[in-house]
Image 1 (cartoon, helix red, strand yellow):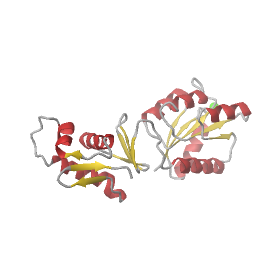
Image 2 (image 1 turned 90 degrees about the vertical axis):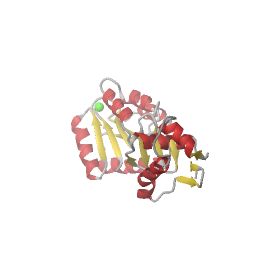
Image 3 (image 1 turned 135 degrees about the vertical axis):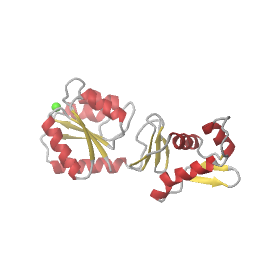
Image 4 (image 1 turned 30 degrees about the vertical axis):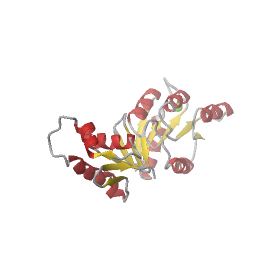
Length: 225
Ligand code: CA
């Protein structure tokens, strides 16, 4: 389910948009103030952000500037002012689109669909590890396949992160064991294979993907497609 963040200080408008978006099947979070919106955008992954320009505290253009320091998430500006300066500042600042209030909800929904389509399949957050549809955010410790979040345990995440950081290289079982479980690990040595199976059950099988390849007698590799 695609997640949309609404940053809009006019609470009635924000709630109205929220209802419409939820009706369309989107997951929605909202913030009524610039700083709170920015904090949400930093703390959680979103597929799209609707951002009002005239906000108390931190205005929309400044919020956009700060969002662009860590994310390429599509941003549609909501503005009451239909001036050339605002459009240019907003688009120069990295907005994908803007819509002038008052707007018809159908028009907003159409623009949202376009912005989401454009962004699909691209890397949206800096520093993420990406192979095909798989995306790992080491800072937030989140894993996504397409737009679907995947819950991983700490060990599963560490193992997948290490394979992605060393993609296109075969990682020997012994190396994985040392790096992920530590030198003093005394359990079963097939623990690596067990965890690879856990990962496959979470990131491959539900999606019909093949990401982790077995190199018989040696170890595992994740390759660029
Ligand atoms: Ca406003």
